[in-house]
Length: 283
Image 1 (cartoon, rainbow, N blue to C red):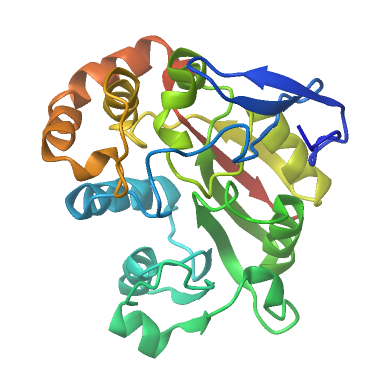
Image 2 (tube, rainbow, N blue to C red; image 1 turned 45 degrees about the vertical axis):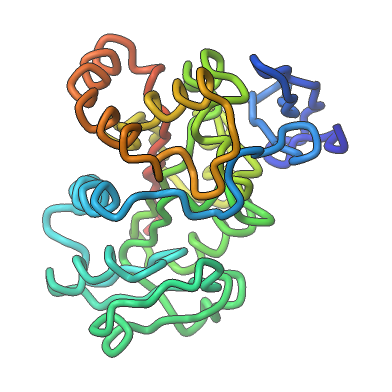
């Protein structure tokens, strides 16, 4: 592997073989995983987007419930806003909204968000943090994509008002799913997933940029189709340029298996494939 030092804590990395082939670089101290597409190729998907519109709407509603607070935030900033669907929910709840996104997926943005939001069509690192601030800064599955995750978290902290909250969702490199499915794990299908945090590496990353009250949890309801997608990739490996969820039988299996998946995740939280970081900027 080309990575010798952990990008989060500076510890030495060693090869981590994956079931079914492929290798990641894992930190011996915090467990953080980094991926090189040469040694752990995506194989089955050409494009970063591998979702399904109906599932995406459900997931959006569940994620909004996860992010919202009582009382709701007065201002929010989303890193990687995509179509602006999540910002639209906060906008409708009365918040002022802003965000940054380089538009790598070439998605059409919600017209009301485009009209009323303070949108920056660039990476968040290019946002002037001296002129923009928010009570809530969040990113939904973005940290696994960026060039420099510590820089992204630092900008998020700089964008926060004193006492404000940062929240991030990202695939869990310490999930049982990676061990069970190996190279077939659905989170590896996306060729732009270049790292996988563990709970420990995510805590260290947040603390290193000055955030406090750091908490990392594992939401039960995020990415409910991960197991079905992973099993399909494991048992029926073949090229799927649009992703395994682009196949209707797999999608239906993922939907109907949700109660079983939830029961398994309740019994063993380590099966949950996502980490949820919540932290605060000191007042």
